[in-house]
Image: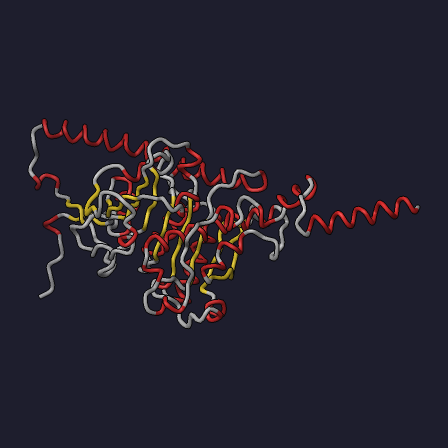
Length: 402
């Protein structure tokens, strides 16, 4: 017994020495690596570097006016949603969780999580400006450009607890280019409408990555049809689907048919006796212009950068100051457009090109343009025009009131 007691004392002494600065043994090293602060997804390990801290100076010159800062922060918010679900799967508490560190440095707080009722997974979250945390650093007012609330949506997680439902929605988009049939769509739309009604659409932002960007685009567009425009930031949004491929084949067939008709004898317009009337949906002087961030090496999102950039603003470099450029004014001659930020780094592996971490890296160089590529126009054109609903003969039109 005495021998055993001496060994225990010796072990305790060695432990104290090690904690005081001695070499850690293998067991302690393993324990250190498993602690949350040493996790590869911990904010201080894989998060952005050299990010300005919000302070009283933002009352004079807001950091949120810097497009690079805004992009970095919103990407961090999306990463937090991924980690909220991983924290849930690994049973980490609020104190040991990884996610909070990805929003607290920017003076935001979590107010609601969006739950997929099919498997109980967290696929989104609502973050709001944390006034109490800001006041602690003498930031009396919310900086100009900082959203009052942000709805953030994650993409696919390749882990067994949630992969089934994630892949199910991936396949839904791949087949139909629409996510409206998913429970996540209705849940996200309800949440976005709620915070827009509460704070005003101009004080709200929606953001997502990969599958989450697909949801954010379609949810934001649905709200825009109601005349409520929210700022949207979409990272690596999906651009490839079977429906779009079939539609492209149909368009090519339509072009060929028009060429054939052009070679046939023409008929006078009066022979048709029918004129298609198309009405325009007026949305005031505004135009919903989402921000799309794509990597040319990512085959999931690269098709957004194809064809017809208009109003290009810069041929290289990080045009961060232009990320807050005013959107185009809506008129009948203006095509549907989006602010497209393209990252080209040569040949990259898919996981690197599709990853979220690239969007807060210090050496990121973007090309920015107001873009109306074929895919963007198809995604947004339903906002500004309605399908033909009436057909009338010119002779039977009602006379205009005198």
